Length: 239
Image (cartoon, rainbow, N blue to C red; front, side):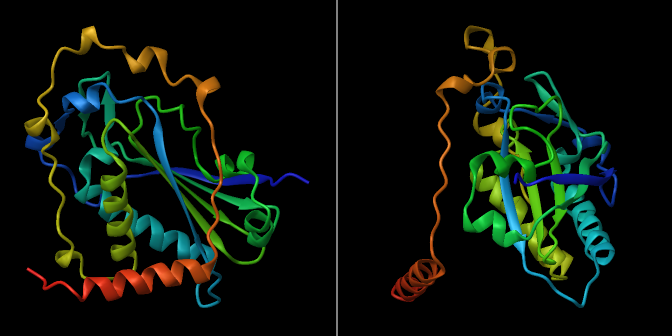
């Protein structure tokens, strides 16, 4: 039996504070201009916690996401061609859904075609969106948070910065202690006329050439890597 996801609500989360007028046009760098128009995805799974109901989890996620959108203000805007992001505080789509199974069924024998069901949009369905979120509640009480960000405005490292910052805010860490990001890509790689380059916005990725695989790592191996990294980190003085 296939895993079925039923959407129960959809809304748009807007920043907790408005973007200043001086920052409402985020210029894409040259690398952003020629980047493929696809979403980068992450899906995080969280164990059941009887102290919080699904509505309480949802409200907490939406509140913290709203704060993140103020810090990472281009994520709440809309892409304009291959030129810039209109940081108009239009917000990020936020979808909630329920799964017809427990999480164990997903991770015991993972099927690649099911992974996309945990995301709010297909990876090549960018449109003019910059970011979107889907929260899924499993029958066992676990929760999945699927997060996608357009490759036009960030790479994997910046994506992790967004995810880690959102996690910190959601854990009720001091909002003022979280470092604000800098959006200076266009200073390092100034925008250019990309007419001489293959335009990803019209061609898109060639799906026939894409290969997707699943790699699983047991908890013992991850713990061993964490321990190894922790021990090596102590060998060097911190600057």
